[in-house]
Image (cartoon, rainbow, N blue to C red; front, side, top):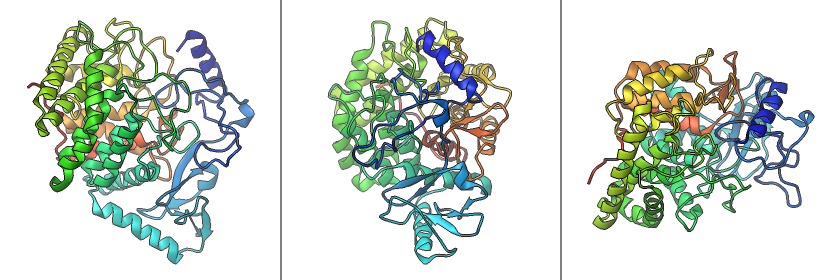
Length: 492
């Protein structure tokens, strides 16, 4: 982001207690009546879901509205719950029915787009509760304690609520987050796959195939109806790693009787993605400069792009072997080998810092070099430890990075923090993983939803629930339960 925009962001966020909130003055992007205007925003908060090129749609501070703290949902629609609407309320256990402080129930009936308030134990609401519980029971709820399982249940239900019938996954249910990112969607697909929700996992992958661009890449994000990007935000090359990786994770868990045929349907997407990734590598084996998961352009190759591409190329090569396509497998395996060598030469001596020039500090994306993404190199444990210590904030969570040109402020970001719980769980360090996971789970809001951020006082802030954090937490719990969360194999 240009320095002038960073200064602008810092000045505005100082006015709103360090949190820049999205503002919608003309209805939400989904289900907006015809003729209404597009959302306008105060500012894009610096970071993953809401940072990028300025779009020129700003609203005055007086128009700021609160982000969601929860969701109501039925099979086809969702409705956000704000803090004002959630005061004293709690979900009926394992459902999206809200028990209000008055004792009455609020829920979103099937076939409706607006919620209703009904008497407690309303029979139609009870049917929706039973359906949610049956869906959870049909899969696996990971966790070794009641608290962990309750958190996993809530995260799974939130991801299901954010998943549209066409396979688009909303990052969150507030304006500015109500779009589908390939990155978030890939993590959610893997989480659904490893908890036995095959239909949801595959639906996301089908949407990824439908929304892939002709050159094998993806837009940074799309409208939920699949109509294309909402703005001119730069696309991000890491999607070419995340989507094949998610497909590999799905394939490993999918029912054996049908998975080969369904993989065959996805394979044209894999081929285009992997060929573009392989073709992007330079003579040094590294990809070009690209916006990373921060959604910020870098001037040199960054670990937040290189590590996912390595995972994706290895995944694509292994899927090619499954389908008896040795030419594809050899091509992508060779590209993965060149990329792995490039990472070892350029990033490893720096402790896997953000960029190969060593000018942009530590990056939580170091965790992408660990399973379930990549087989951890021998020097990764130390890099994880030193990066975690460098990014740790007084509130106990992590900032995404310590790049001096990116003033993240005092907010901890739950996805960035959760990366380390997953990395340590998947590399056989459960005590470290549980310590981080316990912090993340302790920051759920009163409805039990996982927020995007945690403020300097340790309170949940920004949007909740966030699909990306939920998926990382679920995968971490699967790994801690002894579930198999391997990385795609490297080598021929």
